Image (cartoon, rainbow, N blue to C red; front, top):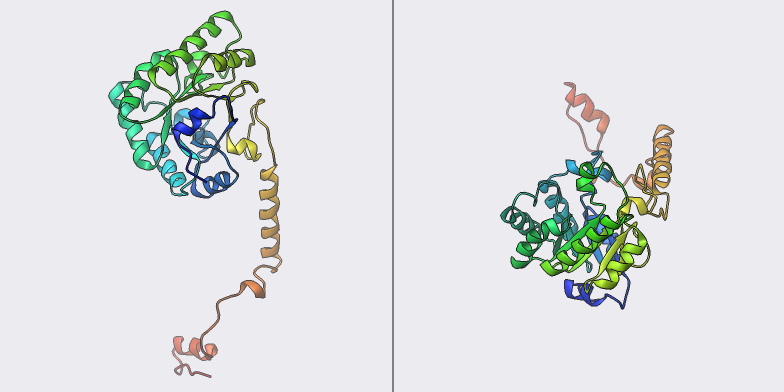
Amino acid sequence: MDKVTVRDIVRMKGSSRIVMVTAYDYPTAKIVDSAGVDMILVGDSLAMVVLGYPTTHGVTLRDMIRHTMAVARAKPRALVVGDMPFGSYETSNSRAVRSAIAFVRAGAEAVKLEGGSEYADRVKAIVRAGIPVMGHIGLTPQRHLRYGGYRPRGRRLEEVRQLLLDAEALQEAGAFSIVIEFTAAEVAELITRRLQIPTICIGSGPHCDGQVLVLHDILGLSDHIPPFAKKYVDLKQVIAQAVSSYVREVREGLFPGPEHTVVRLKEPLDLESLLKELEGGAPAKQC
């Protein structure tokens, strides 16, 4: 199948549901790509689900670039989107463009940044540099301190008005799609109808043009799975059981078995004589 491009994603609006999932390394990128996703997001959720930070603030641009490179090496058919971390674009347009260029050099085919109309100039500058941008409105985890936690968005009139303005500003700035996170489903549906570019929802109902989830939530590996995510398998238990079996077999002398002992001498040797030689005795002999 042909490589998915930004143009393909835009064309899917209103015709085919878009599927995006996170991946942070080479093997999982290959797996999710083989499953048929349209986009792979190297998300700043890396901070929490891979690196163990309590929030996304802990991950650096260097971290994100390294993991984007790993995902890109899988050469996925899916579009690779690099998530611009906290501190990599807020201060100036030039800083934002430099960060976006670093993602492209690492193998990303688009970048995502959080924020609405207040960052429209950043989006415009990055797009002007030739790099596709995915917006992100609603709950923006990088700004959870400002909002007093991970609160749902779009439940009151003023928030709804601002979300609509944000979405339109990002579209006008050149974003090719917008993530809407943890926002009232009715509002996400309204935004989806008003925009000409696709919306990708997470925790914002079924009426967007697509959906995105964190891979570790899908697999049951996250310590805390948000209420809007779905655990499709309890891989944490599967892994624990597999490692427990390994521990038991090693301690009971069951592993490695004969079938796992694959390296043998190329020629017969008197190893006992060799030991004696090393201890100062007679030279070892071949059998």
